[in-house]
Length: 259
Ligand code: DGL
Image (cartoon, rainbow, N blue to C red; front, side, top):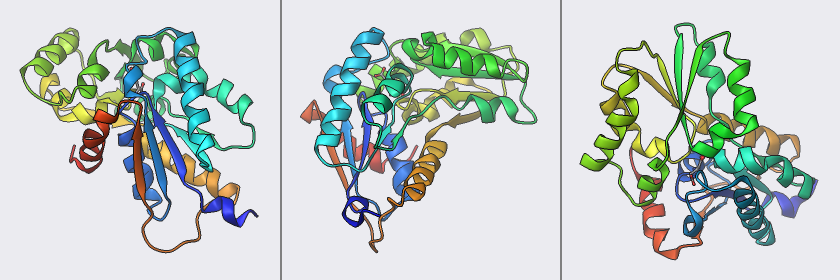
């Protein structure tokens, strides 16, 4: 057991600010750990880039976090996970690297579920990883994949409510006005910050779920299995870094925000 190693921080990465929704779930479950969050807002959105671009930006960001001495990495971005998780694990076989994927399973397997909308970036939906995931549950529910071009960008700009967002969501969700849909899966870590606007503009009762809780639990399991959980008492710290330093005040605000 490496005593020093388990007192190192946990790195959490996203293309921008969205991963802060996952960071929150991780801090809630593991309050004694130290966390170092890196958002690559200067290069966001990833979900509308090519696979090669996302791979290279993700590798660069994760290498940067590891160079700062993190003991584990959470890739708190569905797009980066679908593009690069295999590559990252090959590059860093000794490091626990936890990814996130759209929570299709709990939505499709829920007893009352017949139709599930999965909101995600165009790249996540295009990638094999998601296509296989959606196909695996097609006999349990009607899985409707909904690429949301531009939505992560609005969150990056701090547009979390208001007429521009309402108009965008109404147009996006219009085709489902008369379908029976029981679940909306937020398959991009930016979207929990506009959960209220999604609910309002969907206009009917619907369960809205995301993958942050499952990712936090997976992080805890991985750290426990490798004896990497901190043994310190008291609250750990949360440090924010961003490739666009102007985003740091908003990072702290999103971390505190009710949504
Ligand atoms: N937050 C990212 C995700 O979970 C993507 C946002 C972006 O397009 O950069 O997919």
